[in-house]
Image 1 (cartoon, rainbow, N blue to C red):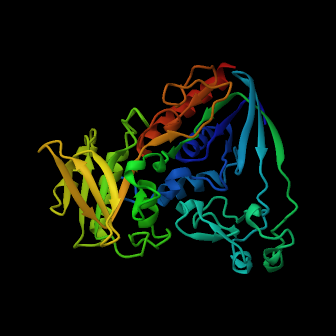
Image 2: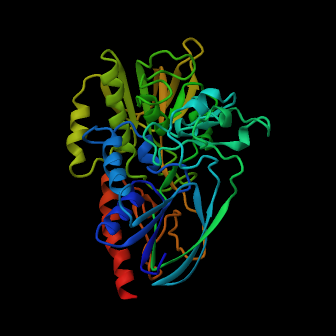
Image 3: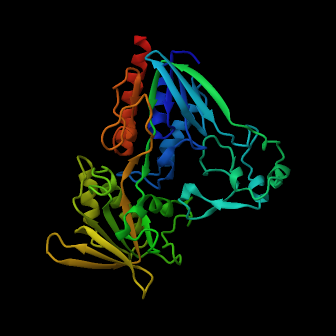
Length: 413
């Protein structure tokens, strides 16, 4: 790889966009992703707002742009260990973890059928199980199985190897180190959901039917743990009344002192999931302020027009389990009327905020909330949620601009 190449760290929607936009005008790009698949958080969503279309549509289009393009090199299960140098001449060291499945894999599923070991499904936030060898999700890229060797119960367990007709499983794979010389680097490292268990008063982990907003995306997804049925976790009963708790940790000096930008719209979107699936359902959205800037105000007005959706201005102080029904009881401050509000529901959804997923390193500078300051080092950029909390559309627009900036670094050098 030459110094006229661009290294993109993170294979979510922002990283993919940066890679294809730069490659399609003739520049070599290297796309590095720590997971076993591309797509990041977007791959875990049920629908985008405000059009409410499935994210697989946009992802598939971009993945089809990647596959035939010789100017895009993809490394999955890979992390950047070190970076040194200057604009036009950076050296990056990559650590590639073994997948234990090679390119002969046809995704036939014979290995998973034979595998006797199950493990928690991280893609579905632990709400179901997968086999130790599995396809990360139905539209995974690369379309290749991955083996979690750490959960195999016996070092001699090779049922999957015997079941594979294509000699695609290699239990002897070792970690690899790859060194690249590139002209510019783009960090598109995305985000993690804020840890809901840190908010003791909201009951996550102790009250059975409290879930996070990302868990709700998976519950509503056709390829999720309940095949798209919105069922409460404790007993798999239909969640006919759902309360959405806004700013769960956000705008709170004890947790995240910033607004994560997308939580209001995400909850309004998820309110439509419930209402569309169960016509007799009720939804309450408990909020501090509803933020739906610009064109998104039309979506807010559409949701607000539904008589079965109540937008309640009040900060939730506590969530407890209802011993009579197994549901939840919320205590909230009534901002408009004064006093307290008590609300019972089948399930509560916490709108947890976005947290930067990148760790500190010597070539990056961070603002006070842990997001990367872009452009402070010549030739090093950040994009999407690595830079600031933002929605999918904004992230794609930002990534397109960042592709141009990274190309300019190559031209300057």
